[in-house]
Image 1 (spheres, rainbow, N blue to C red):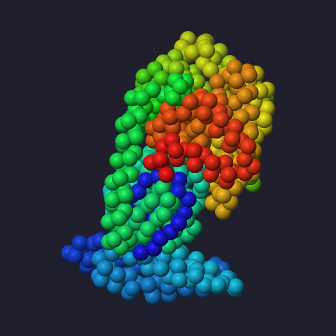
Image 2 (cartoon, helix red, strand yellow):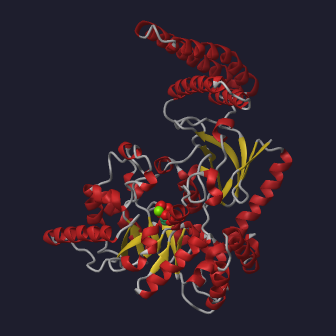
Image 3 (spheres, rainbow, N blue to C red):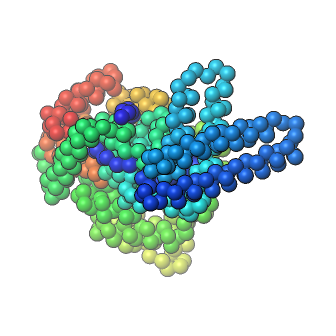
Length: 580
Ligand code: PEP
Ligand code: MG
């Protein structure tokens, strides 16, 4: 049994088999081979080993012929000898432990790599050796998977996904109905994996260094998404304990959701507060309804750019928007224009930016890619004829960007008029407040924005100068930092003065720890992952506005984030003790 500690990003407990999605997206199938198939599996491995052996011989011959002066052939000769050493050990594992060859290869190489990397490596020799073993492992796995065809065994099981990081395009390709939990090496609370996991109510832990290196597919794991623990190959006693916790957790979540669904979304003194959902795919609208969302506060549309070289056309955009409009039955929907760039759906050229998070992303990208922008605007405007839509732009940092975007909207409207296509002429056009310049000058931007939506995920990263994906400095990613809280207050006040509705759609708005504080600062519209709605509602129904104001005032008096969190924890505990 091994206990690994990471950052808890989506609560809950799951027990299942590991499914390792490594950098090249190989999936390690689960391990048990039925006794009568063992010899068949051994032959399959031997055939794969023979193929890898002959490929390596061919590589050596090629290098000797074309690059005779380099010592490259030695590297491949080394790989050949690694493979010859490994082969009998793999065959032994298949026969003795009934492992699939894929699992046996992965398990053996992971074990060797782990031993090697535990040593000091002043000369870099070990690092090179690790690379050699990993290379042989990949060749073997590639060949083994090639024999099986596209669908590796085990893909039909519900599993816990282990990955170095999950990019949006990888997550979209996953069959989410088969995902029990997520564990990644990179990322923090606002990484895409974390948001996705919370949106789906799937337990997740991020920031466990080397976990995909040390773990093999098929290992039994417990993921404790509340404490940030991953227990590999647990003993019987631990399994029993966690099965009981798992049952309790599910019943607490379900109880809260059932209890809150039909309750009005208002404070104890009867002030109405909008509780909306963030979704990333049209299908999630149904999920939002189940949790009692009053509408969609953030519809991320990047899934339409799943393949950046082959983006969705106007019809796909339009159909997706119509689907959400239908599912939400007249409730308001705030749709965000494509937020491409940085960590989201980048194509090869964007990846070459030196500082992608400070690069061509969000509205900057859209203003460069007029083809994509106009396609989306046409679909949004046409869909607006069928429901209560609002449109907002991500990553706005200047007034001029909103003016330019509005001019393009006008142009598209004129085009639709000429065609005789219907649209909502009053479609509200707003902006995300997620860049410090937009937050500081929110009052000025209100001149061109019909509404504001605070994106704390990015705002915190830019205010604190902390990459939201970098687990090394995640302690500095502080939504409760006084600088962030002051800025939030300033944005809310600017919105109020300019009579522009202000919503919050960053992860902070779904954390019950901050609910009363945000209410006290003046927030009246929260948009969050659907599964967080019941808890947020529970907190807001327990406080009055004047209590919340008092809390906000006291929280703002602390000089650092830790004290703010301590204070809010203590106060929230009194309101909803089951959360702690
Ligand atoms: C945000 O930055 O807070 C936000 C909601 O946008 P995203 O997480 O998609 O960047
Ligand atoms: Mg953002």
